[in-house]
Image 1 (cartoon, helix red, strand yellow):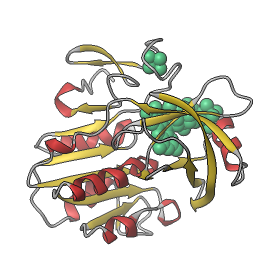
Image 2 (cartoon, helix red, strand yellow):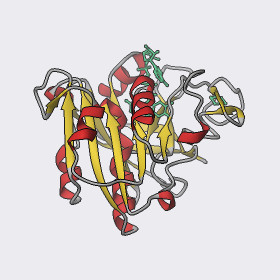
Image 3 (cartoon, protein in one colour):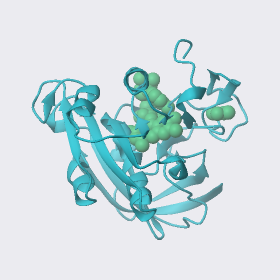
Length: 248
Ligand SMILES: Cc1cc2nc3c(=O)[nH]c(=O)nc-3n(C[C@H](O)[C@H](O)[C@H](O)COP(=O)(O)OP(=O)(O)OC[C@H]3O[C@@H](n4cnc5c(N)ncnc54)[C@H](O)[C@@H]3O)c2cc1C
Ligand code: FES
């Protein structure tokens, strides 16, 4: 992991209450998809964790939803301003686990880290399709970005304003393909439903409120089949068979 100052290059609205921030700085510690960064928000004590959504050389992209004090402060920041980031945190997605054709399943802002994962899968010559779930059309993002990578993309919205009416599991059912592995990121209820619905192996990016974000305080621990594991250091990505959904 590495701490350093990053300059905001872009900070623009991507969907309702959802923003895309491009930051430039020393990305040498930024690893693969599913890893996260801890952002120090001016005036707030605890850093806020965000997945790396995309990366291009010394630039990294965060997609964040405005839900509280810290993210509201980020929305107000302008290009040219600087942010203190700790990069290279957590254990990310396992690209090598992908089989013949993988399924990427994103719920709401949980879609963010799947774009970098999709690029990594494509670079590794692994086929994949994408199922996304959003509340409504105004909250949707990255649909065209996944299509541009050649993936079949199906969307479900709760009010039917984009794609199928329903949940992400309905988007999965709308896909025309045979899959042998999945990668999932979204809310706990969504990931629980996806793990229950898909009969093959996969992995999920878990989310817990974080304290240190670096494995020291154990505040983010969750029960797994191999005991209590820290989401920030042992995860956030965990294999399906590790997750004890009945206790999480
Ligand atoms: C590994 C990891 C990766 C994440 N990646 C992203 C991402 O790519 N994009 C994104 O928008 N968000 C992401 N989050 C969630 C993000 O960290 C929180 O939304 C953010 O910290 C909220 O800060 P705040 O000060 O605005 O909210 P606060 O004022 O602290 O809280 C506002 C609300 O958000 C909830 N909240 C705060 N932190 C979390 C959290 N860690 N998990 C779940 N709910 C939380 C609180 O319970 C409360 O209801 C990630 C979280 C983790 C642990
Ligand atoms: S947040 Fe401190 S150990 Fe994970």
